[in-house]
Length: 435
Image (cartoon, rainbow, N blue to C red):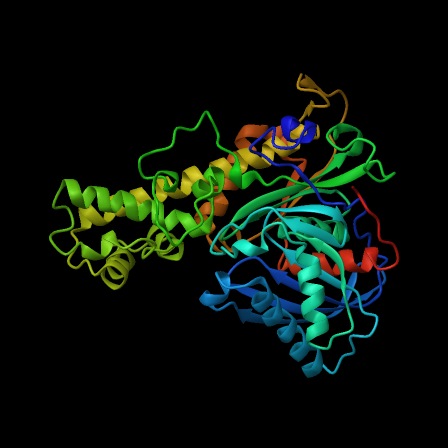
């Protein structure tokens, strides 16, 4: 993290500046719209705010992104999004005139202002090569014009920054946000004085929100196993070295378990002869892994059903079913503990782990530690209880009981979309450049 703040491309942890130097404080009022794109479906949202951190009304609509558009042209992708927003506004009986729009775009972007930023690269399922280097906010603005809408992007953020904004809207002790869903990332509030790579280009604010981009981190202390996705090349996936993300996020955990099960089937007859489906990449999803790990029945009937329905493996002995549960547990526990280590690393960087980390020399803080809230969004953390328990347990273990009592992990439902609308509200009267 220190290296990423010192200079561009000095670290696998990109530490991208977001141009967000103020967060919602609860005084925002009015009607705002948001678009949230981070995977193969997106959402459009209308948010009505009242004073005192009050959401008076919220309307959300989800839309899928057809597979062909994840590899097509940027114009087609953004036309789909703009058209969905137009239809949404019309159905809601709203007006677009003068409304501020927040755009959550959960891919690495190098921002030049709060309302603009160029795409660095795609991750997850997307691979629209001609869009790399383009200003994604401008792409959306042009699509909005083509679709007859009279509004433009006020705030461009990613999901981690949006979740941080929502967390801060409800609780000013929120210092960081983490996404743990299909993908994973984090953002946090940093002292502007600690950011040396853009000294003189930052705003006058003492604080700046940093997009960590921790998915591309390769932990040198954690040996990659032969089953980790980084060693495999499935042509339909984006294989930029997202080592940390591939060990943690929901897109990949089921696939890691599948590779282990496939390795077992190749070395023994533990599953019998009907193992053809084990060779199909990504056929074993993370929800399947979670269902197996959370099976509490004495005969593990859920394990049996999942293996039969998803992998066409029948009549698996109870002893083997227990082994499958153990594999799913190991994959889950490693992922949760790595995510917990990432959370504590951010708390350490800003001196909220019981140390003072203004430099690389960590020293004990004197006096009472401050309360710290970490906002969390994502289906893996919210919907998979075993993962959540392992992560919470690891955070407490690393911090120790005294400091852990000052740290709260708080779930933010739809934080990335709501946060984008909240930031649009905060910045609708003032736009600033950060580079």
